[in-house]
Length: 422
Image (cartoon, rainbow, N blue to C red; front, side, top):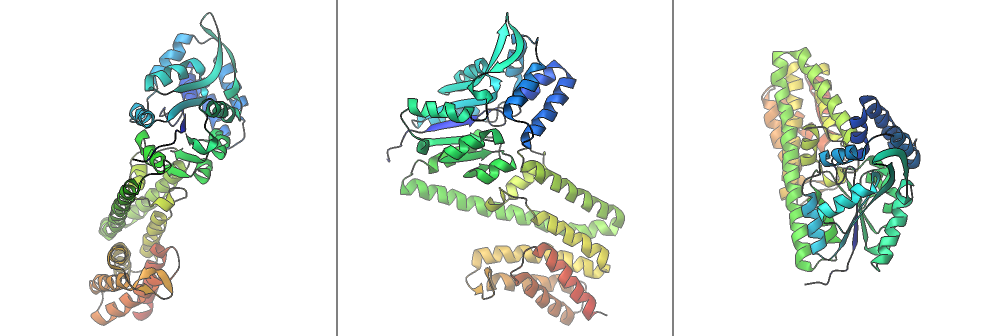
């Protein structure tokens, strides 16, 4: 068994350990007006319009006069992410130290949280109380932008390790300076700024999802590395199958169109808009129920840090096919993009051995699968000879080295059908 070098694992708290932000919940406990004000300030902070110090002063000043008991009540109501305690225990059992650091939660609560989750350290901002009544004043190292970095530096010196052995898990821009110093950083349900900078990214409500990234940084043995690669390979295939299952759902659109054409178009536009909003939210660490769950199950690893455009191009291809082409052509090209494109991808990944000269990302085997399935889809509405020619043209379009084939396949094939059926 390989000797594991001791590391310091630093967790942000709001959005990483807590499911929501302590400041917002505390403001909501005070009054709904305070909550709206705090929400606006947090939004301005997220877009870099308000510094962390001013954010804390503005929100905490409005909470002057709140009792210490109220702080505790809100703290105990904060929901933790799944397996928070279990993940921290696993890390400590491997010989690493764990620090929970927050620039929004008072220090006395962070100390309790660290003890509750069996972390080594817990640090927060200093909140001033007089006779158990909050004065509205906050201070301390963590109330400044570089505070987390300076505190972590102290902990590293205390543990006699360097930044090379620091792993930071965070979600918002207040962790960027700290992440820039550490060798390894993990974005956990993070906003776009963190996604661009973090070495690893995960979208989950389960803190155990960060453990594989810590394993990787421990210089695993060949057997452990092989297991990780095997798990990743299986996971990618599962993602691809789920992705194509969603893709095939486009084949139901012609059925709905036959029932109510205008409502189907409106529904298609509404779902597309909802997906665009959910992607914007996902890239900023906010989860939209169901849609984000489907995205998480289907998204490829290289899409975690950017907007997923495939569903948008697919819905756009279907939408424009419906409004531009007669029903037989529209139905045919929708079936082609739903079934043929999916089969081509799976066949290419399973059996693809011969690369297409002008597009090394595509295989001859995948193109053959596309042609055969496109021919079947076309024969449903057109004579055999026309169906074969159109399927061949569609196959050529699919094989081209251009992005957005969910849009180019139905529109290109549809235009060819119009041309040969005039």
